[in-house]
Length: 268
Image (tube, rainbow, N blue to C red):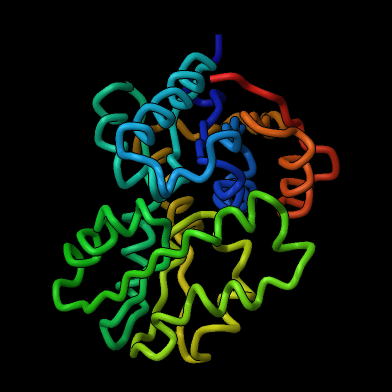
């Protein structure tokens, strides 16, 4: 029987995007064990209905709950936007999302109070970032932009194999001339496209990813609740995907620099 101390932390995402959060967890919380589920078979979540996203997110959370996790990180902006409250009502363990940490970081670094939000259709439609930023800095002007082509570029691995500059330029063109000093990567897939995004935005724009701030929230929550792993033992991360193993392994190996990641198939 695992204690709360050495029980794993669960992480869920619509696909491989949440690996950007896992990368920071491995870096800053090396003593914690991670179990990850990526719903690659049904990715992207952005264009889906609220009901579908809630259903899929709940299925992943239930699967991890059955594995005995002590905390859940919803490393998907779309799922955080529409399902976080429902999840918190359903499960007894702490559940963290990625929107509030990203909003907080952007509000902190923006000098002009003009912030762009790049996200999926679902995240942008929800207005979750506008609400979160306004709660921190009410006088902020926000430039929201849905970038529906970004997630498929990552999930397919095309971002590594082809010139995606034309797609990036077309996607970001609507805000290219807007006056903002900070841009939030409002989808955990987007950090894998960071260099391409930077090329299309003005050089003075600070780009904020929620991954680091989310992991800082995880660390604080573990400490506050007294459930951080303080016995110095851990297991290697276990990754589950509803999609193709070889695609997930390729991206996980490249992004996390794990030579042979433990990736398994799961049916939800």
